[in-house]
Length: 325
Ligand SMILES: C[C@H](CCC(=O)NCCS(=O)(=O)O)[C@H]1CC[C@H]2[C@@H]3[C@H](O)C[C@@H]4C[C@H](O)CC[C@]4(C)[C@H]3C[C@H](O)[C@]12C
Image (cartoon, rainbow, N blue to C red; front, side):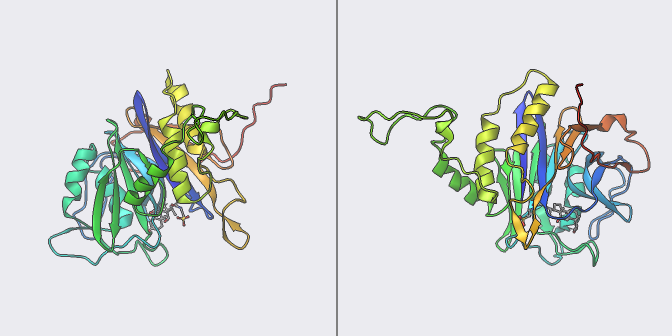
């Protein structure tokens, strides 16, 4: 399972939890403006917006899981197993494979409005990166530094681009069903509940936080969607970058998967391998890993964005304890 969010607190912060049982060896990768992006069915992008994000570099190709460009447009791919459908190549369409989709959009668009335009003739096609790295069944959250966000889902019924008014994406079911399900939780609140059960009878509260008693807390994607909407939309805006980044990671960690709780095969558990977030206005990319919950940062503009080579930053995975005596 995975969760991706857009947190608004003056600036906009975008990123995700990556939940899985195996790690792919991803790292923070900056693709400079003149590093050519080859596409299987589209012309090469020789010059494009620079991109920072989490990626696996394979044969010099940055396979992005999520990231953002220098204009503050962010994009993340999340599992959409059993529902994602990618089509054969079609003449006259912009045929792009899922593994190329993040560079295709982030390389060319500066905001959600431009991304929407680029997607009008898109055909997400069933071309594998290689025999070893085959198609991933993904859907995507795209968000910009003005706070707009959309979801892209390619299913049996075609390509769908939905406005996302809540800035959250998890996994199945389809995005419109996740939005419909939210209606069931409208009464969840940070405040004490009002007794509408028996208005004429007095009911004592026995605990703080009773307004959120009905909030789902499961590892499943529907529960995480609701829990994250509640957490994110009640999160305070901080007065500084430090406070905002701290709040942002609390929002993501509210739906992180701890080891041992989500069994995907006998004795195999999915867990939150990393959580990341980028300040879309400044280009600072932050992350934590399961092993190391100190926040690490890579500033995109400290890298030469006109260089010819990828800049790669291996994840710092070792926990650092601040011993006080
Ligand atoms: C599995 C990852 C999504 C995490 C997620 O949503 N987990 C939930 C699992 S589930 O619903 O509970 O089953 C996705 C996100 C990005 C994906 C990777 C990126 O798309 C980049 C390449 C693309 C290649 O085609 C396959 C390998 C790969 C390296 C992908 C492997 C895997 O599918 C990743 C890592």
